[in-house]
Length: 403
Image 1 (cartoon, rainbow, N blue to C red):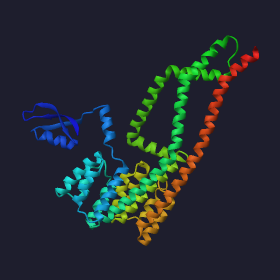
Image 2: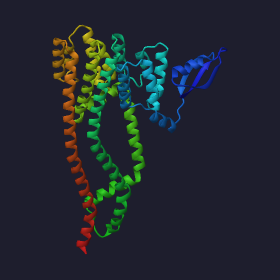
Image 3: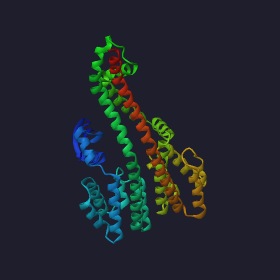
Image 4: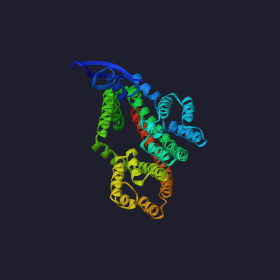
């Protein structure tokens, strides 16, 4: 439960303030109104570090949701009533998901449709998830739709796991390299180089040693300022990315990064086509599927292109033609395959095939990225270690030759 601070007016027109505890801001406002007050503002009360721990504890991962969907699909497919299935899941789920399932169960027992109950928890259930459940309810095929949804989520989770697993090794190496380099330059190198300050009157220090002394001295003196500037830069980037212009600009730049940008595009297209295939196969109209998918795509470039595609389709243009108008967002093979799907009437099957193609290409690009990063890291480490060795050993060598 979250505590909220409110400002409101009483019946005499006086402004009053206080605190209430509720699960959402809407429920908090309702509690304030029940006191006979007119709400002016409702703001959550931050708990600082405790609030951060609570968010981590209450986080529901994509894997948790996939397991929940598979269990629900299995029980519904076995003939269990929906309320009984939710009752079992409430007892078996992790604490964070348990609260959500309990609220969904209460809504369903009160006569609310399952999709509407899910829609009250948009932080957990995506628009595409809700739309699929709704289509299953309307068509009387909730068990079939849930099975397909569970299959899709497990494939997507497996694909994400492959990508993360392939990239985690180079990410750890790069992070470790920067951390060790920072510690060496700030705490270790200054003590070693302090010996050479005594040699300054006897020999002229080599250029690599002077460079190392300058960099190490600057970092050892100003590293707190450097950390503050780094934090400020990250914070400023976050603010810039929250603006519509900044979000679009950074998403465009992301696609222009060699290898990495194309990999990100392939990953997004894999998930996009898989979701579209599932929505269309479940009986959701192509127009509604495009609108739903445009809301869940994480990249603005592709999201805006999908919104324009849905507008073109709404005007009566073919789906393939609408996709072909955005070559910066969608490759030619996508519009080509969608054209085949329109002609054969098997759009869901074609989109599933395209998703598999993109997934294979993504796997190949991940392997290319990891295989190209490893030698670059080794070269960078070799140059760095060589520079340190030369900068530290060369003054000693010069001194011994003069003796």
